[in-house]
Image (cartoon, rainbow over all chains, first blue to last red; front, side, top):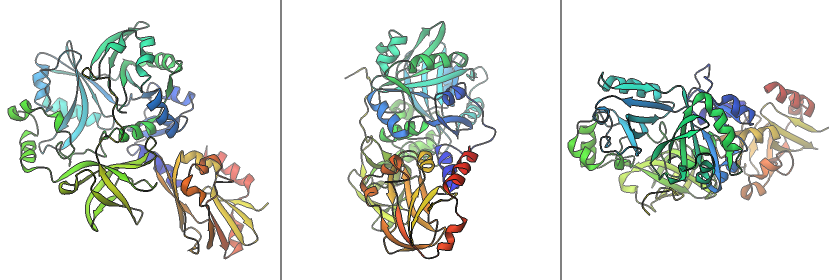
Length: 383
Length: 124
């Protein structure tokens, strides 16, 4: 084994480390709880505690606490904030009810994806959660395109926790009675020990769960209270990645980037019909062209034969011809086999299509499969 | 004592001209949950420093380089079905492959256990 390989493990976990790393509110807490830390999105973050496999299984069977404070939490307020956001985001912002959460996208003029994000309607505006590695660019993009009378507030004094798993609702309700009444993609304000919490029933694992925004100076107290519950253990970025891959959820910077449009990525659901017809958002013309012509390639799931995983960058082949690329790949702890996501020529995107993946000069058999790999278990309002 | 260690975190147990090779406990700890090990074909010749095996964890792939030159005379076939054996017993049952040494003088630059432990401690 080479020393470089150990370093590359850290690099693969996140973006290239820009030194010095900024501490997050829970950096010391993670170390005290035995986490192995890596550079991620410019921060010092936990990749694992007990091991990725154990944390992954614990999340699917009980509940795990993830620190996602590296993500950007933004508030957009002011008269006409909804209309102003609709000029930047392709979703229906003005039609959202208070406490409703939507998945949305930041697009450039070519309908390339600059970031994916969650938007929540609040009483006095909107709350956005954007990716950590892209937050500074997102803020610059929003400042450039939002009118002066709209206020953008980067909530750097807030931390963000995710509690994920079938045991999450029971565990969180022990601290926040009533939180169990929230449905998937709904959010509300709760009070705990004199602190104001903003809680969304959402997440990035495919399981039921919550994301909790809290003042940075109170987050350690909340993390302690959560892991004191029998159902809850802390988990790191490694399990977060294997869980979201099984859930078929794209990871920005890997499965999504400015050269990828929402239609190729299978994210057309984030652009409702009314907005497609109405237009007046960045990237609309390019997006409509892409819808009319049909995407050249599509994001698909891949099941590999054998046990060897295919990683990001691996080439997909059909009849010896290059037909696509793996954008995320790893070993599925739940299915106990290698799985991957990638982009493939539209004609070969049908479920069941047999392919080959080139891994370390070998060609492994694979087939296209429907996403998610592991069924979502969200607590939806209907059904 | 006929067990040697490399800076690349491999151990080599020498018996006559046969060397058994694996990765150290420190290495498996760093890699995390191991899900796949690709072993060399018996009969292949490997050169010191050349790629000999691949170990894949949930998170990443790493090369294992041959610590000494020789001919592959045996591989641990149990790792094919049970790669987690490397996590459980890296320095015993989780061995990777056996070589017939082509030059025992290559062993001279390697560390003994004590030197390796000091090396690992120095890595922090």
